[in-house]
Each structure stands twice: as C-alpha cells, then as structure tokens.
Length: 337
Image (cartoon, rainbow, N blue to C red):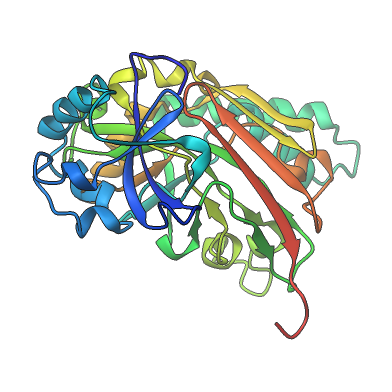
C-alpha cells in the first residue's frame, strides 16, 4: 500500500522465528499490524484472529470495525507492526459462498466465440465477431448476468505455487476483480448494491478449458465443477482493500503477465454487467453474507485466445489498480503423486 491515507486487511503467516504465527493483519504503507493484540477493541478474540476465518468475523461488524481499523492505521506508533517483507500473505478471506460471473467482458466473449467458431462454408471471423457483439448488446438490453458456483476448497494464497492436474494440458488463466460482501444482501437493487460491498480483492480463476463442455452430455452443456475447482485453482489476494477507497470499481485496470509478457490488459469498464448489477443479480436468488465473494468475470487475453495454455514453470503476475499484486508459479503434476 503506497497511499498513506488508505489501508487494507489480510491474513498472514510469519516467516521468521520471531513471529511464526498466523494472524489477521492491517496493511498500512510497507508495514503490517498484527491485530491479535487489538482483538478486544475489534469485538472479537485473539483465537479468531489467528485463523483464516478472522477477516470474515470482522466483516460481520464492518461498519463499526472499519472505523476502529482506520484509527489503528492512523496510530503507527502503537501496536505490533512488522515489515510486509517479513510475513507471507495468505488468502485474505475464507468465504462461505463463491459466486462466479461468466461471459461478462465484451472483448473476452468475442474472442472466445472466435476461438470456438466453425469457419467453414465461407463464414468469416469478422462475421463471428459481429454476431457475438450483437448478442452481447441484446443480453445487456434484456438479459441477466450468468452465474455459477465455485468451491472455497479451490482457494489458495496470492503467492502459492499451483499444481496443474495431469488429466489435462489445457489449463488457462482468468484474472478477475472480486467484490467482498460486508452487509448482508437479499434482493437489493443495483442502486443499493455497492453499499453491501465491504472490499475488493484480486482473484485468478484458473480454468481447465477442455473440461468446461461435456461432450458426452451436450444437452447438459457446461461443467464448471470439473473445469474450475481443482486444488489451488483460485488464488485470492493479497489483501482486502475497503470499498471506501475505491471510488468507482468500473475504472479499475486489470493486468496479467505470463513470464513477463502482458496477456490481459483491460479496464473493468469493459464489463457487460457492472459490479453493482452483478451483486444485485446474485442477491435476487441467494442471501449474500459477510465474506462472500462475487467474481465479476475475466477480460480478454486468456490462453484460449492466445493459443497458449499454462505449462510447467510458468509464472503469472497479476495486478488490479490499488489492490496489490499476485505472483503464481504453476508446476506440472508428477504422475503417481
């Protein structure tokens, strides 16, 4: 965090003998405040703030906790502070629900349509692009967002290695902005939806492309369970940045590089449905609770569009304006392990 007027919330593991424990921490500048000694002031216990569920517990009283955390961030001479380089960020949230929006960036959907198109009998790539763009316009005018469910067991930290399962060679990246629910939401309007978002974070929604569509059961369609939920396939973090510090989520810029080469480079303004519209739409069906994650879709530039899937040793680095950065190395699964 470089802006002295902002702070973030995370979950950390100490990497030195002087501070080996796991703890919920307050990130301010280049330091992290171990919040366990502040547990009583935050309305919880040190035991809770020593677990991955600690940040979700704070979100359950977010209006009060936000003011307290702001006060702690403004008191750098008090408390237990550590250099950010002395701790390892873990996933900053252990969500109850993970709701994932699909096909929500215009350029991304057009590129995927082209990659799957049958260009036989004189049909051109430009025709596919034009048809898909018209479909997107129709969805925006009269349709609703498309959601599917992710599993919390797929979550890993923002710097952890991820094993690529050996049952496929078509694993792909999908950098996404995620909204973190604070105030419970049920059937809220788009105008009211962002008031229920406590924070934002970075996710990389890894996907096994050749498992997404069930060729043995085409009438069923997609199989997101197998395509997206392998262990580690949802790196999250490095931390939760309060929505109070994000004036307009649609102006955030998303960038993912693969081995130093830029692959995704897009503003959230290319979303078909805005963050507010997505939160509202999700709340029409389910009761959103503190700590739930709403994934907002991935911009153009996935491996499917580049014709380049993830390989053993690849390193992805992901950033979203003001939300920090992820670094994920992928490792091929060794047979028999």
